[in-house]
Image 1 (cartoon, one colour):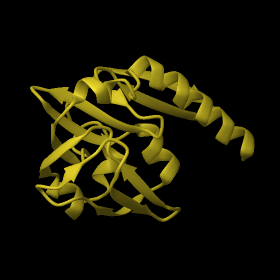
Image 2 (cartoon, rainbow, N blue to C red):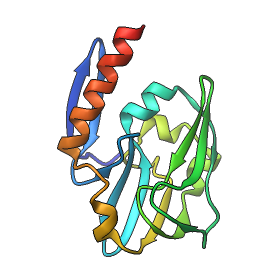
Image 3 (cartoon, rainbow, N blue to C red):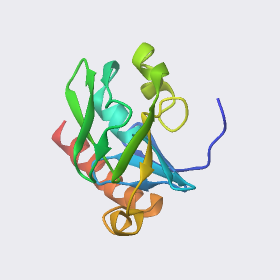
Image 4 (cartoon, rainbow, N blue to C red):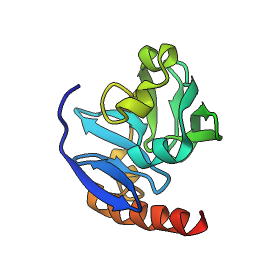
Length: 151
């Protein structure tokens, strides 16, 4: 497993990591941008909150996505989680490993547990609707604290 640079927040007895250098949706979907390609996955908080992933449903290669559009789902023992695309573009590749070993999402959400690669179109405008790692850390902390109060 590659060492990644993360911000951390502790809520109750739980520690949540937020990978630096990625952009996030408020729902906890991340995108790492490199040369016009966006690598997409679910945040550590989202995978911990959702539970052990049992099944992953990813879009087909060649699927055109719009930011905010449903692009797939993960099924856990607790819930079915809809994954919305953080960016607009065309799916270039899906992570076949997570289809075979969905637990990779729980074990390594920012590494081997990524979901899709998207050739982005219009990232400049998509970026306006995304959070930096630091901004997402604050949103995620308040979501985690709210959940802890509800328990």
